[in-house]
Length: 421
Picture 1 (spheres, rainbow, N blue to C red):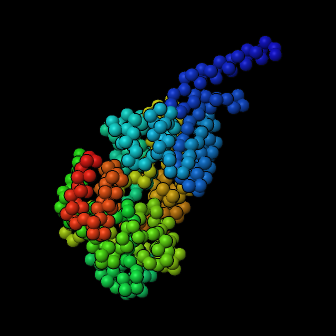
Picture 2 (cartoon, rainbow, N blue to C red; picture 1 turned 45 degrees about the horizontal axis):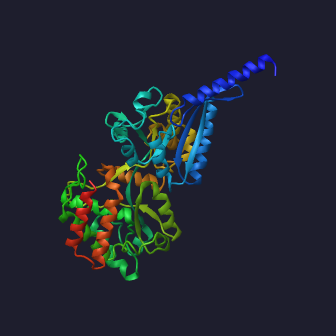
């Protein structure tokens, strides 16, 4: 090796050594490719194969448009993703850009310092593409910790053919559901399917409408009494006893495609999937009205961001991370690959792209419009705590199987739920 080559090799080794010593978090300062320096970022998300495919394709396009940036990808199925992220967050080795669930943001960043403040890169992120209310979903204290991708809420989806068969209008009230059960139950058909998540959301909504009280106060305190929990339990037991829904431990998704269930309650971003089950039965899937008691001062209808994007507080490349984040929420490549997989985009530019390409249609769009037509409330992250929903489900089952009275089940549930706050 001649002297010039030795000097060049030594210089390159020294530069690489410096880069490896100065890295922080999961960022890497530079790498070399054909003599060019590249900033390296890591991007993590979860999802099925089709989500992985369109995300990878979009990131490749981002790299073409930003030849100075290399994006390392970390993705997997949802199972185990949270546990892996927990470890990385504790070790400060999390990805530069991350897909997160809504409740994780405040969990990882209770004081707003757990993620990078996206207001600091507003010269790159076009925050004008979001309503102020939408941006507030990602605020922790004074810091914009995350960008919400799309809105999610529970909607009623019906098999119109079954209701037409019995000469019934689609339900517009709770009473309509009970009336439908009187007619359909003779043929072993339930007007509605209610899984464990829907069971919790729906019974909370009913009791908030009846009592005029929020289950969790604005300052995060559990707000229902034993009496109100008892009314929730009684409402669910009534739904089962009168044939509106099948008891929670007996129900299965496949009965929707068999035509045994004439409707279901699902998230907005699952509307197409479960509407497809209805279509499999030869039915016609339509979004129905969300029942609200006459004269109610609250609807009890809660929404939250479907998923969110955040930037690591430990990133050494906030500018490049912001460029990737802006691409993920507003580029044509990502919008047309993602379509409505995560719901209807909050980002106005991303939504406009779908609208111009006639992609804002179908059951999911109808579901989103139905949610927007009602008064809704941003749920406290605690609302989805499995301790609350599992405790409620156990209380209902204990009453249905005569293991406890409504009063006993409500008292036990109240004590367990209060301990969780």
